[in-house]
Length: 325
Image 1 (cartoon, rainbow, N blue to C red):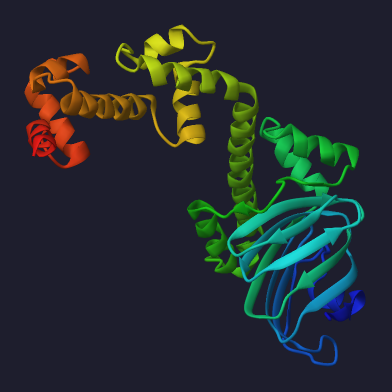
Image 2 (tube, rainbow, N blue to C red):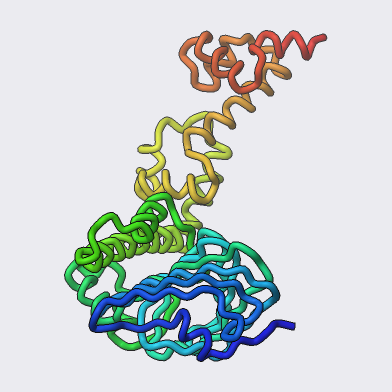
């Protein structure tokens, strides 16, 4: 059974808040406040943002029950270890694995947080005032309307349905946030810029994921029809331009759709099917290598032989001889 930590003890150490004057606070293991947790916490609070870095070894399963925070937007990064949160006003469970993150917003954060027994746990929470983030979004062309609408209407949300991966660019910005290369009197300005840079990378990732979802739901049938057409007409297809000319999808949509849906390209699919067809002809039809090459779209036998050997590891003639043997 999980050991339950009361909200007030945890809030004092890792609570979310904003201060008119920048302040830094650190906490080391305090068994009387949070038993069974060897923790190291560093908090930076300013007028518009805060940074909470929480590192810990959990000596047994833990639950923080009824964790309450002031209204804010949280860019929550799971650096190491695992966690799971249940929010009162955001549906579903919200587990995070190492190198995953999500963006949460609520006017009335109230959650239960679960940590299983583990060592080397670490998360980094970057919190923003709603008004500060709204100003940034307005100034930059409202790049993600879902987030902006939620903030404007006070509607709680988790931006991603499940934890999103922290990419290489985000890792680099997080490193700079944790290792600020400027003087103390410039750190607030520097950190504010880095947090907004990080947010821009996250919103870019969200838009790309959202476009993929739309593509899958809106274009799946058309992509399947193209795939089926290629399955039977691979010998006569000339180009991606020809395919797009007979589809409502653009060349770009077909190219990206095949990559995402089938993990291949139109060219690779056609080439694969032509090579398999060529192998069948070589083994069963009695045609010469040059004749087979022409049937599968090669103007010269030498190019066909090179492509065939790359695909199957033997030349067409060697395959024919091997079958006869």
